[in-house]
Image 1 (cartoon, helix red, strand yellow):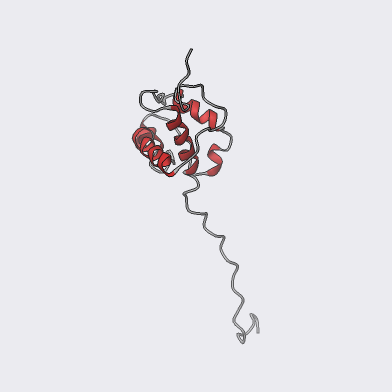
Image 2: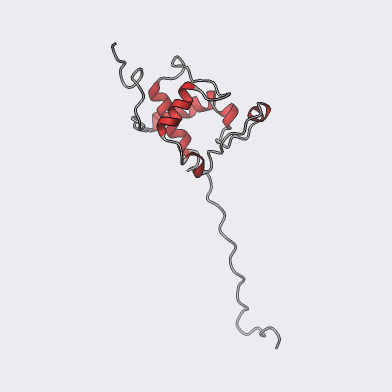
Length: 135
């Protein structure tokens, strides 16, 4: 059986074979906005009215730990084949290399979040010359 070119029809690789570029990530962002954000949220936090109305709890991809136990291959397969109530991404809508770029985009959602707020500073010492407590 003849194979496809540039990873479009070939069997998916075990690791992400697509090199991320500014152009591929811009396309992935558009594909995500068109096909994924309605349920997973614009920022990937999974807190949308659609997800809630479907009775599903989606992972918060803004948390770096959310995808730590998933390989790129697993994410590719979920996007391509669907899972539970999530529909498959048809090959007519997105080529394999585009889905690999979406995997990279999704992984980047946690990197774009603000850092956790710093821990509160310890109480400042009394200014010099101030009377010590109890004196």
